[in-house]
Length: 590
Image (cartoon, one colour):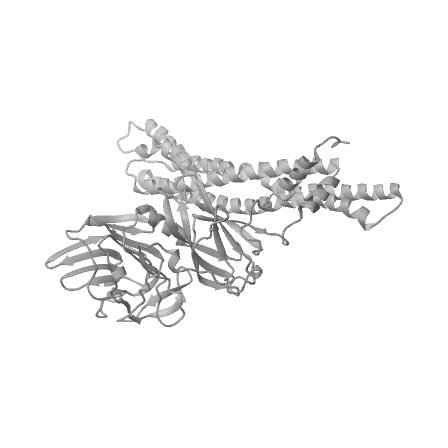
């Protein structure tokens, strides 16, 4: 036999890797056996563009039907637990929203560390214990410098501070229960809408100040107030004039105003933040990136009187729009903190990744059954599984390669189009191959410029040469040839995924049919049949079909994903060819 002398343990692990490669392996440790399920959550600061490490960072975990099984836990989510990477240390958390009917949950977790660079941190999420008590700790989710956090998760009444300081509103006018960026938000539409926050010792900003909010302006504003603290002698205002945020500090007759470098977009959610250090440096942030800075001639302290959000304390200059997740801090947070905050809370977070669901004792796949299947796979079955493994490995390599290549293409295409639209000298742009070497648009552009140069050399003796119709048609043909070449380059290799999609299941089916034939042939020779005799052989035969599907299904999704990228890039190529040709026709045509 082909497998005579082959180590059984190696065969078993090969099957586990090939057939169940998409499933998590048995855990070496399990935080608490009373919890049936767990899931690894990866925190990739490098993918999120985080340039500096953070500690004790509250991150937003978004759960939905695509990454969580809402039917396997308690209906109110009180059996959720979050544990550090050591699978021993529980983490502080609180649930903003948990809805089984909508299959959506928002959970805030205090992550011990986010490591900048290529190091990925992990935490574990556990659930599936009907006897579990509620272990939420909203106040413990935030550090001591987080003085106020409004999630606006209430459907009615007034907003509530999620921190341990309990800085709840004194007065409130506005609409809760409206869709926000994360769950519900606050809508301010009427004159006089605002939140008034009573002064408290926890709102002393002498050691630094942070204000952050998700904001969606309804339209251009007339010096609308987002935050205001102080009195006539000394005050701080964060306001929006038109669609541009600014910070205004006043102390007596001294007034300083600092504007953000860019405008907000009406009707869109954006993250706005302001920090002030004890050294009186002011920094404004938009979507996690610095967008303005300056300094003030006086230090902050505890503001006398109430603070106001969404309008001035007297009810004037109300902001028109929606707010979500307002933060007031007693320290000036770092730029990396805002990057992490934006990446965690944004609707398309690049910070968090969700692994497969793992089942604990009594819920997992028995390794004994897997071993039984592996022991009964015949030589022909192993050959087919090996071929499928090779096909699957090549498909994964192609998918990763193409995904990375398309990402580079789209990024450099955007950069090149931006440079092209502002270029005054095409020859200067022609020499930037190192910057746009991966851009198909740049490659087509170079071909077009080379053709124009050849035409220019032939007509250098003319004072004001113009492209004839024939010359222009030749130029456009050069662009279209470049388009075809780049289109072939983009589609190159995708046929391998179609082979995996169509050939994987048929190879698996071949192994299954062949295995079933061998099983029944062996039964005929033995002269007896029973379920105990048939089941192992049939199960091993079906393993090849499983292997074929494991190869084909990811290839199918990967092909559809890449095909969508191909369409986008191809459309950009076609538009650029027309744009470039029209520009040349207007500049040099008859």
